[in-house]
Figure 1 (cartoon, rainbow, N blue to C red):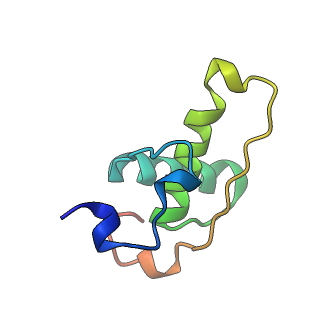
Figure 2 (tube, rainbow, N blue to C red):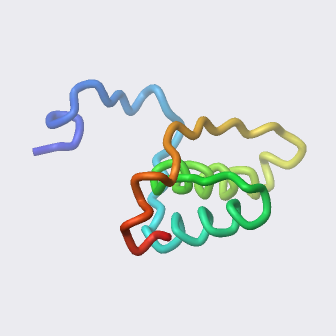
Length: 83
């Protein structure tokens, strides 16, 4: 069964790309942002930020603004290996 069959709200034509982020990359991003900026991110927010940074580093995006919306915080992850 295709992803779009399982999740009909997902519309591939609404996005330019899908970026896979490993859990470890999200954790590293969350820790870095917590140390540098004081933002307490959850896994999905950190993954979204990591992907946005990757998009921003592309040559075609030099000088452009990249917007990412982070909707969760790290409170529910305090008992996990993330923190």
